[in-house]
Image (tube, rainbow, N blue to C red; front, side, top):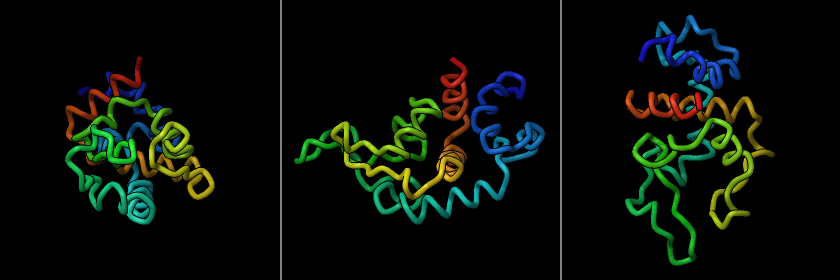
Length: 142
């Protein structure tokens, strides 16, 4: 995907993290190494126990409710539905959790700042295949 076509969506995440568009052209989808490293560390510390060390999840039936009526933690590596959600929806899900909606994810707003949440999302999206990432960018432009 050409830089000009996706720069608006990149600005959502990259701009929120203070990363320049020039960095996008160089590597890591515009994400700076410090933010990626921070996101990976925060993910390992807070998210990996449920979503897997590499965001792969340990469940194959993540789209089916469990015996308690809740959906199990989905993979976040681009193989499930995460990319269907906007950046704002991902931030809200992490910050507010899903317990009020009948899910099992706790709210992280008292643990992770918005900046840290964006770093986690940045790291997750860096794992996604190019076509999934491009589709997500396009969804964010709408």
